[in-house]
Length: 190
Image 1 (cartoon, helix red, strand yellow):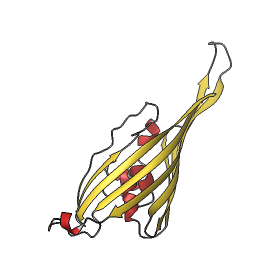
Image 2 (cartoon, helix red, strand yellow; image 1 turned 180 degrees about the vertical axis):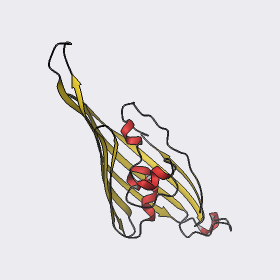
Image 3 (cartoon, one colour; image 1 turned 90 degrees about the vertical axis):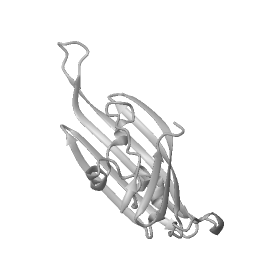
Image 4 (cartoon, one colour; image 1 turned 60 degrees about the horizontal axis):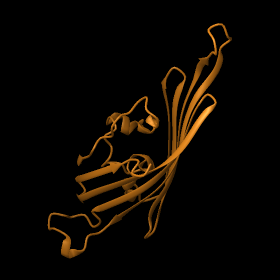
């Protein structure tokens, strides 16, 4: 299969940076360049347009130990509904523990943790092109795939926390099964 995609921009250390971690082994193996080939429940996170490719209900989960006391967990479920497209939900959590804080150098250290979490909801559907607009080289019945997802994000460090939301969109043009061009945009509306 030949695919073209816009790879995600990495932003480690920034607020919401945990949302740019790879959530499955396939994405990690491709260094995050999974935009046009996503076709499972993780599409709610990677590219919601990929939800349109699901033929049956699916559940997926992953757990990754990153470094020190840091772990990244992801779980997602998706189900196609006839004539409506595919609906999905997911949960992402990154936890880091073992940090210490002190008010002064002589105080007893107090342990704290950093927790990032996101609830995701998404929808994806494929569309056919009218015969008048379909070029002869387009052989797929439904070459246009679209998707939207919403993120509800919460980050907490010690006793301080903040939350926000984001809207993500995906678009894939798949003129034949061996060729796809995709665009996925995160935080269109933060």
